[in-house]
Image (cartoon, rainbow, N blue to C red; front, side):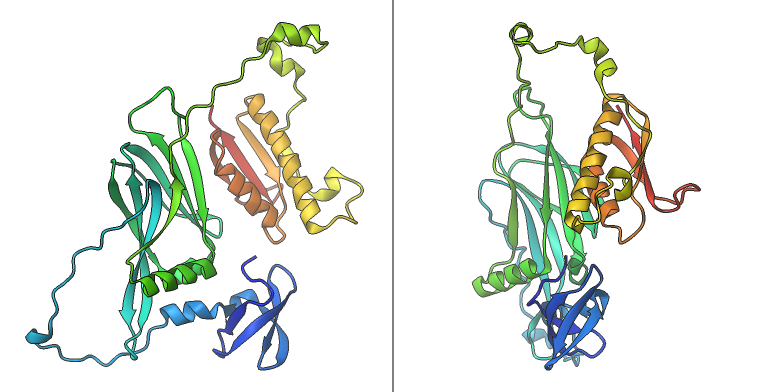
Length: 337
């Protein structure tokens, strides 16, 4: 949820400031402006911090004489501790009052280790991929990724990065995935902090040490058999698995008869648990594809499933497009083994 009770907001139509007093549903909140309470859609309001940091005013152009031109400073050095970091450098502009306003952010990947890494960087806004980059970063190196318009940071950005060693090491993990989610209020606070400290950037740690390989635990099968456990031949493991499905319907009435007393959170949890179950069975049976019916609604279940799929190694691709049988209420998943 983008807003919480007590958050300060600004009404986009009237430019008046107010407060969120109640979360009504996924799309509407109750706000109070100048002592008057009324409902508003979330796309009709925004955080006032965004306006404070990004609003530009028309500034009269002033003539600059050659004696007034200041020497351009070199690029500021990004300083972080040991590890790998994602760093943000605000680019400021001036308004009519000569105050700093943020125009955009430059994003850097910082490697403060002695090890080079391959990486895949992906930026998501509201669950949708916006920018992807694959490359290699050397040891003790700053790698410029791209710019983000400051106004876009109110759309729940998520930064996913997958790392692997540029020089293979059998003792180290084959890859390492990490994700960074930022909220608007967190960004505004960090920008205020670096302004007070007169620092050029702020950063978030992705990892300090690249992880070691996790060895599969070896089990003494003879001891398990003697203890009464049934031991299966791995070549016949599929024979002992529950049957898989090519189509899974996650509508709650299909999963349980006793759903009317459940909260929205309990319903979503039950649906995701059922999805994970049949996803794992599809992978275990090496199915080429799986269709998940999640319905349309507000899109919460669909978005949660898509977020999970983006992190699954077996997923070659997935698509939520119009289907003759399910409309836009289903996602088709294609696997690659």
